[in-house]
Amino acid sequence: MKRILTATVGIALLAALLAWGSAWAGWAAVALVVGLAWDEFLRLGRRRGIEVHRWPVHGLMALGWVLAREPGPHVGLWGVTTLLMAWLVHAGSLVRPAATAAESFVRTATWLAVGWGYFLFGGLSLWYLWQTGLSVFADRSFWSSPLVGLLLTVWTCDTAAYYVGRWQGRYRLAPVVSPYKTVEGALAGLGGAVLAAWLWGRFGSAAVGSVPWYEWVLVGLGVGVVGQVGDLVESAFKRWAGVKDTGHLLPGHGGMWDRIDSLIFTAPFYYLYWQYGGLAGRWSLSP
Image (tube, rainbow, N blue to C red):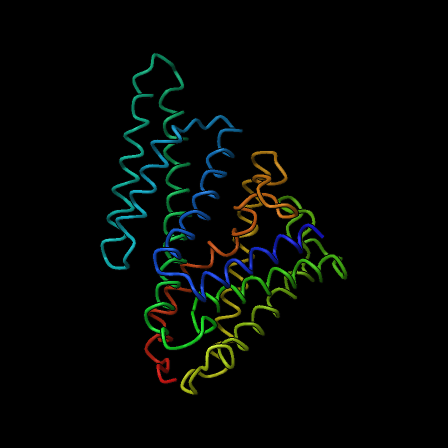
C-alpha cells in the first residue's frame, strides 16, 4: 500500500509540473530529484571506504548542471571540466604519508567518474527531454512531451516486470546481483515497454504516420532492455555496499535512486534516439 500511495502522489505532482509548471520549475525539479539520488550514491560509496568531500563535490555537480542546462557540443566539455575540478579537490590525499594514498585517490576518482557520467549526463538528458516538450509541443497537452513517453514506457516496464515476476516468476534472471528478479518478469517488462511506447506514439501524442509502428516497437525494446540493465546496475552497487535500499526517502520504494535507476539509465539513450534517430525531425507540429 505504501508503494502505491507514494507512486500516486509522485505521479500527481509530476503531472501538475508538466501541465502547469514553468521551464524553471521543471529544471529545478529535475535537479532536485537527481541531486538527491546523487547524494545517495556518494553515501553508498562511503560504506565501502570511499571518502568524498561531499559539499564541494555537490557544488561542482551543481555548477556542471547550470553550465550545461542547454543542449549542445559544450555539454561534454563542462562535464569533463567539473569532474577534473572534483578530482583536484581530492588531490591532497596524494601527499599524505600513507602507503595507500594513491590507491585511495584512484578509488575516489573512479567513483566520482562513474557518478558524473551516470547522474550528470543522465539527469541532463531528462531535462533536455522536458525542455523539448516545453518548446516544441507548446501548442499541445503535456501528454505530447517526449519525457512523458519515456516515463510511461519505463514505468510500464518496471510495473509489469515487478508484478509478473512475483506472480509467475520461476527462473532467476541474475541471482547473484538481484535474487528476486526473474526471466518471466524481464520478458513481461519488455512486452510492457513495447506496448507503452507504441500506445504513446500512436495515441498519446498524436503521432504522425511517418513514424511506422515497428519503430515504436524498437524504441520500446531499447528502453526495456536498457532500463532493466540500469536496474541491475543499481542492484549490483547495492549488493557491493551491502544494503537493500539506497535510502529511506520514499515509503515503499526506498531511496530516490531506487525510484529513478531505470529512468536515469535510459534517458540518454532515449534522448539521443529522439534527436539523432529521426523521431524529432519526423514529428508533426500541427494541432
